[in-house]
Length: 419
Image 1 (cartoon, rainbow, N blue to C red):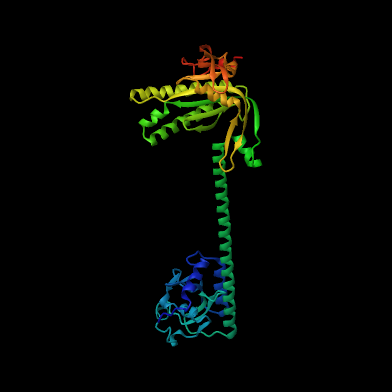
Image 2 (image 1 turned 90 degrees about the vertical axis):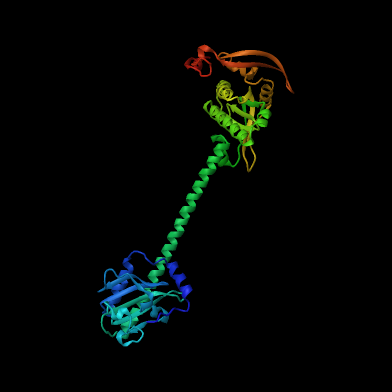
């Protein structure tokens, strides 16, 4: 049997792919259509099948057909002729029709003797497959039976179209679900990034009100940390190594600040700024800043002992601490920054700049809060740019009676009970 191909074959195959029917599992709706077709026509077998580029694939079958029969090559398929006709194909005796009398389906084991098939045609005129009835010997159908088969083929297409629309709907719902999941993931990532930039309460206020109301804090403690000799270090190291080590230090500072309820505000080059008592007010911010500063020096001391063994230059910092009122708020629209302003910040920077490497300088305002718990060296009044004379002190350690370690870095239980 010579294979023939529909004139609109590329479009037909594309339409068939759009219905996503090939190689799917059995469906009761198509099985019932095949059974109904056989009963209407009084035939022992019926098929609902689809024709792709190389085969006739059987979606549903009814009657006396081999259980393993699921497809046949397109070149011997009788249904291939049906889809080319775009109309009912009625062959009462296949052995008397020169188009089919040499087909293996007729002369082989199946020994099909009768065929009547109706193409399954889309609204765009593409014949996707057929609804057909067969017998194993010659048979006649009445006009009414043939018309009933034709109407049943249209119902098959209605069923197929509803199935396609359901698939499209399910895909749309799936895409909506994926979009929702992406939106949730993006929001979570956005929230995570926001929390990396802003304190949680400030981030929550920004998300709720789309802005943050500036707030005045009558008492907060500002801590300024600045690496000394940084330019000399940069000149002896690869740029990537400088950034990597600076990042490691600042990451460690972040952990120390978080452990002492201090809020890291920003880094400016090799300088690091944090504050206690903001944005959540508390009464221990001066103590928290002092403990955090001691841990920063302890971290660097341990690191420098290792660097000394390797004959590497030490990382040294000056630390300045000051207590007083500040104003805090968020600046920026596309890149948010939580920051503080006021003379307290300026004095903290001046106290740090007036200090010496490896020591913690504190202003008198901070000393008043911590003097009963910490050992202090008095520096006296120091001239500070734009501020005049400022009484300063060096913070050495926790007093021995309030420390749980010999270095005076870690407070004991008595430390927190001290008034």
